[in-house]
Length: 410
Image (tube, rainbow, N blue to C red):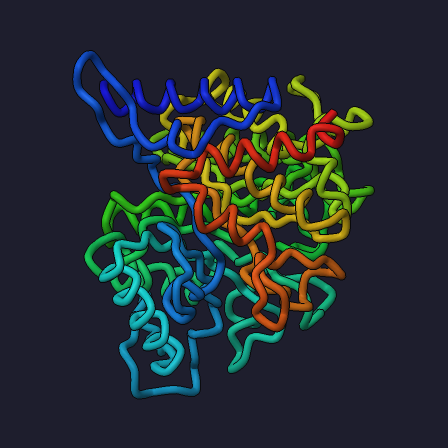
């Protein structure tokens, strides 16, 4: 009860600060009085980064780490590593690639970091993995991510192997995400069709297989997530499927396959206009409080969680597994984007974590500069927000940047 009381008090302090644009001293956020007893105010940490920067860069903090696990670690040419047999067929795995993941997971557990693994099949997969594991499509593109074939023995072998190796446990992953932005099949979950029914059906069958294997072969404490981008009722300029449409179809189909299957949502809380961080707030009707909103961003995250709670189940977890904010409008706007995203995650009890895309500008984000630090390692203001937002000064830091940019958040 006391922790909940602290959180409500902290939220009220921040809301008051943002609404009045009055910044209280940092000491106001350091402790909390209940009767005659003083308690230190400690914020639950929900922050994290994609990549292994918390393990490899000195002083980078966080509670959550996300790593991509590519299905081409299955290697039919390698006959020396642990294998998984499906039917009468043995499948072998690349020992070098797997040892890297095992080592990073062990390091993370020792530091108290929760790991999320994203299962991906890339177009440049080697040793025949594409032919064994991808859905049969007409086109081949090494730059795409491909949908997995739910009928493939190789896919089943991969799922069974990682359920044993990486299920939740001492050296396992807390969360598994199947695919990436699966409502955008043209680039991120290629199936050869943009038909919503076909894409949802294919993904649901793959998800059901993964969930069944993890529940029976792995550890049923591991949470399995569907991945959606920020387009809620927008179709990506005709290149994708609105996230809400895909989610509803997915639920219908997976419920028919296995009514006991539990799913969660990994959402990408980017700005509606990717180069304009300030568009994460209500601007030009791109972000609204209605369930018909084109996009879901930090300014209306509650639309997603309210919909999940009221339509499906309050026990559904939301993982903000990828988001970053471009530096184009200046460091304060970028820092305010980080602050607003994290504040919304912190105060929403359905949200497990907010994992940010880039510690440093990587040059692989379609022209976006999302890094908390510059390419030369110089920290940006967003890095200060990231480092401090789960500490004693966290509410102060978040309120400070939101108040400083009050003319932008309309």
